[in-house]
Image 1: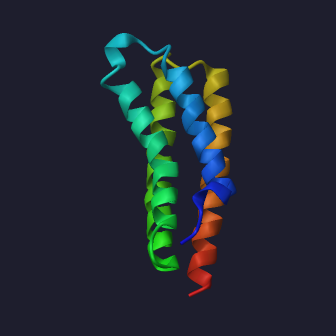
Image 2: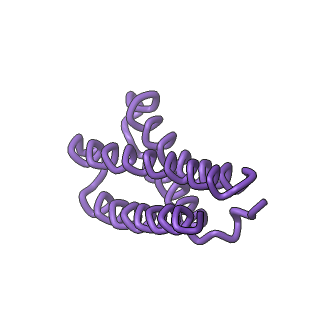
Length: 119
């Protein structure tokens, strides 16, 4: 069993999640059960799947959960774009979050590739 607390990818995705929770507090209240909720769920899914994968028996299971986390990261990428286009997210916030999310996605891709190569 691996400890997810020690993984840089988990720490970065966790911090991204925390920061997105803060910024979505300013979204329209009528979006609380719509876009706000979807952004929060997609953002939370990334570190959640990394943590769950760490608790699994082997690298194949861990890799599968990292792939799920990558799917959530792609979903979040679109939701941030939508929030920007609907003027819920300022362009400067969008760019900062997009850059951080791209870093997380690159780290996920690298770790997925490494686990595949270690088979």
